[in-house]
Image 1 (spheres, one colour):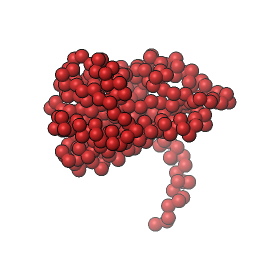
Image 2: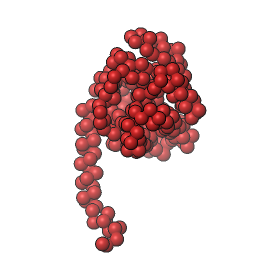
Image 3: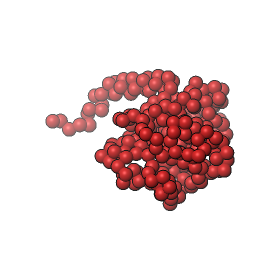
Image 4: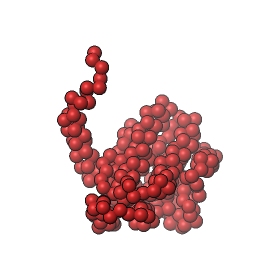
Length: 278
């Protein structure tokens, strides 16, 4: 696209900050949201004259709407929204309390949904725009210890695919970006939570968590390259509704697709038994 106006949530660190920098490097105007706008502002040097750091409460539909309205009021339009804010729960499904799970879905799913709804109104009126929602390979492939994280990202993936179909008639595009492992602070305590109460019986989960700890800051994905890919994605005239990034993500989705098809074939007779005869 020609240079446009971007809104990036969760922009103060990690993947969000890299996306801000990549969009600015491509000549775009960027508004980044953070719980600490001053800290975010201090981290952006190149293109700082085209950057705004603002506070936004993901828990408030009014705050999301006010942020979108302010962007449109200042710049006249909103071209790309990147919903990046979020954190992960890592542990056995049984170990997490209702409160822990609800708090996670509040940020990762409902916060994203509030921003998406607000942005869709502006984009529908201007008859153009793009929503980029940061999902994960875990939206498609899960494992011990990542069940709840996968659940939030699967919700994001399906919401995005629906929006891509619903908003196409207005010239609005939507893509769920599904990276594999990326070398950010994703597995640090600042970006992931573990259950307050653990259950020793879950040895598979304990092993999985130990493997994740060993992978921390050794992932194969480069956050700067992921950010550049997202900028390129926004330039595509017909972007996919889901985009897997990284060789590990592509390998995992191919293997998962083969497993799903094999299982469907194995149980075909039982599956077809519920359809009324023609």
